Length: 236
Image 1 (cartoon, helix red, strand yellow):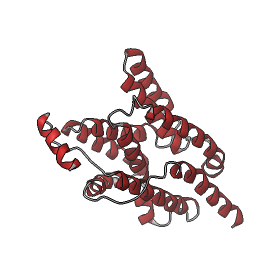
Image 2: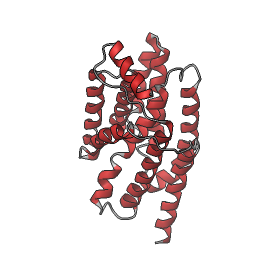
Image 3: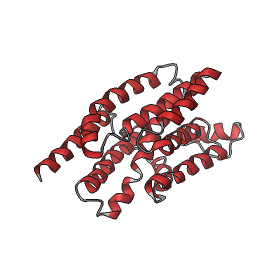
Image 4: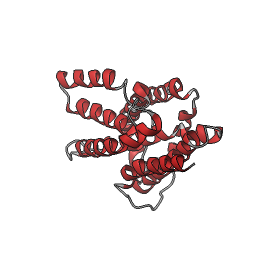
């Protein structure tokens, strides 16, 4: 029913691209898939020396997958008024800081971990949605300066912003822009595996996974799985 209404809304506004409508349980399942792939990717990178190329390629979908789930929620009607952006930024800041010591021990001090990249992306969206020349200028400045010190750099932020723009206004232009942003992750990943997320998301619109939301699991999982990998390295 929701998908049918989305099609009608698109037709009424002259949009040529169907809005992505993903059930809440399926969206949660995508987040769990991202966590599993992230853990496998980090094991492959930090414990196996990136010897498994299948895990490496699958791992390249993790960041855009997390970014999409976050941006999909931020693009929901009424999210800004409900204070969703601010609550998300607080959580990302807290757990990004909690994860920093073990992340630095494993990877180094630069770049900052992915939670800070998601924090930056959320902050930019928040500033854009609030509007005004000063806020837009601040969003651009944050993108340029802070984008240089977070994981996936500006390319990760662009992938998130592309997803948000398309989820909020599903036009062919925004879809092409999002796809281009995902393709630009080649600069970081040296492959185009991130684009494989697009057919995955289309498939997600076709199913309804009966999975309850676990709000804090992702935030807690990130520092915990890094700590487990660090401990495994210390014991080997």
